[in-house]
Every structure is written in C-alpha cells, then in structure tokens.
Length: 272
Figure 1 (cartoon, rainbow, N blue to C red):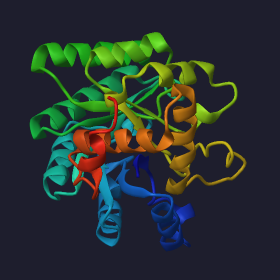
Figure 2 (figure 1 turned 30 degrees about the vertical axis):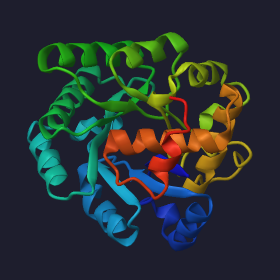
Figure 3 (figure 1 turned 180 degrees about the vertical axis):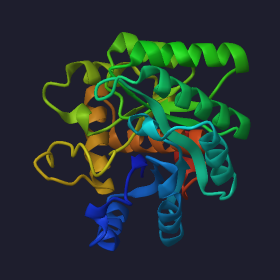
C-alpha cells in the first residue's frame, strides 16, 4: 500500500502508454497519487487525468522556475481553479529555486502569494526548494508569524539534516524521491533516517529521477515509488510494508485523501 505524492503524468513522454503505466502502478500497490502542477495552464489536462484515473488527485500552482510568468492576478486564477474541483488537494508546486534561476524577489513574491491562497482555502502547499533552504525557511517563518500555521510538504527533499529540522519545526512533512536511493546521496539518506514517522512521505517526481535499480531508464513512473519505500525502510531498519502503511496514512492526512480499504485496521500496528 503506497501513495506517490508527486507525479507529472501529463508530460508528453507518458502520452503513448499511460494506461499501461497505470496498470503497473496498481500492480505495485500504489493506491493514491497526487499530480503536481507546473503552471496553471496545465490545469485542464491534469483535471482530465483525474477523471480518467479515480485514484489520482491534483494540485494547482506555479513552479518557481516559471515565475517569469508571474503577475498578481495569477493568484486569483490559482485560487479559482483550486476551488473549482474537489479533486484539488493542494496548492503547488511553488517555492524557491536558486540553482537554475536568480530572480529571487520575483520567486518570493509568487511563493508568498501562493502560500496565501493555500491558507485562505485551508489547503496544504507543495514546496519545491533547491539551493534555497534558508530563503524558503525565512519566507515560511514570516508567513506563519503573520497568518498562523500552514500545512505542506517539502517535496523531493534534498537538504541536510539541519535544514530538515528547520522545516519539521515549521510543521511540514518531508517527502523523499528516487534521490534517496542514489549511492552518494548521504545527506538525503541521513535526513530520511531522522524524519519522524508521522511526517514522512514518498514520491517519484516522475518522469524525473528514476530510482536505483531503474536509474538508467530515461523515464521514471509511479510504480517505481516502491523502490523509494524499500530504500527508506532499509535506512530506518523497519519493515517496508509498515512504512508503506505509515506513509499512506500520512499522505491521506495531509492531502485529505479518501483512505483506501484496510487502512484503519492496519494503522493501529504502525509505530508513528
């Protein structure tokens, strides 16, 4: 029982065989998926996928690397789209990325506005953070001082244990992708060991970052989230089935997903 909390299935490299990809994720035990959004123009296509695949839910937002498109009216567009469909379970992905772009003030403006949308709609936020942990922490701290607590997840997390603690202290969940399986990803692996069980999530971020043993493949897919779960279970020295149940419980709690069958009966056996 697994939830892939971050996918991009609307990309062109899934167009030819998405039904087969779906069959594989179901066979792998993936019971829920959350489709992230790079820019609001994707909304209609992602929405159609959530109709086609009942286990798929969605977010809406603007990625930090696309904030050259940002204008203040876009916040109301995102809010309107989010309110238009009950399958929208989050705002995002948003956040900060200083690895590939240096428009910090523009990224922070877009990030803050999307945090405000999430807060106003009582939705969690999916946060992208690359080479920007301190700035991301600063924005979140300022926002929470002004507006109060905010739920969300640091997706595809790649920070140090110290940075991980910053975001745990802010009440956020931490989600790990295929990078946790990479041989030299020592700080990510250390972070995966320290996150409390009730704040841990897993994802593929497909079609990117295929995990070991699929790393050589050009396309990642949701069924491969099982390899992320196995790697984290090995790091935490716990049973992979129990980790699957715990991370499924966590995902259903954060995103308010309808729980799959048997979840409640198994939850009592999981150590948070």
